[in-house]
Length: 312
Image (cartoon, rainbow, N blue to C red; front, top):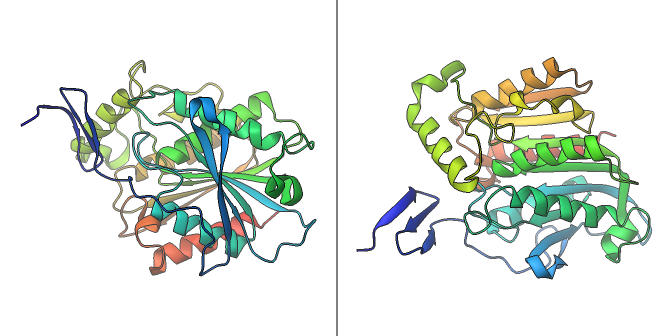
């Protein structure tokens, strides 16, 4: 039997001969209109040279010149699995596009270990610059040119995608994007951690070991769990977050939940002037809304996200 050198069950395994076996997140849904919601869906290439692409969602009954909010989404998967065309994202984002009446760009960034961090952050920034090119009419994608309201832009993501959404929002705050106003970010069970245990983390050293191993595997040049990329509290640029509103969801049975609350504290202490809300859903696991979108808690989260995307 082939020798395993990295075992991240249930996500992936890496063998001594270099073979990478992804155990989850390999499902693919073609970019076809969703029959239940009538949402139109298509895949577009942003930069074919680096295989950077995105999946776009447009709700039905949008007038030819009607401008609606834009939601840029970053999928989760520990930076090592999943894609914008995974079944769980397809379902979740079709529902959000239909109910919130928003245009969605779901970014398909490259994964570690083939493309170690910070490549995922660079890919998502490139994708965002491509999106922003439509604000002044330079871009050529009609769904964005005709329908995206660049004064009502939101970012979102789950797990590693929540981590990405946070960092890209900081970059927007620091570098600005012409013609784009970032209203808020939505983080579901965000992938944050830190070197020193907080709250109940000390009771689950197995989780810490797994997170640390996975983080250093995805980002081999990282300084560890106090790297600002995984521990926002250590980021001197935290107060530069480029939006006014943050909505964070944490799950009661998720080892990452303590960091969701801690993120709120760190943001408020940093001098960032916006408002942050944390919603805890008891008795649920990590990214529960993707595994059971039609269950009561999954639907309640979708409803809350829809109102968040429509409050400006």
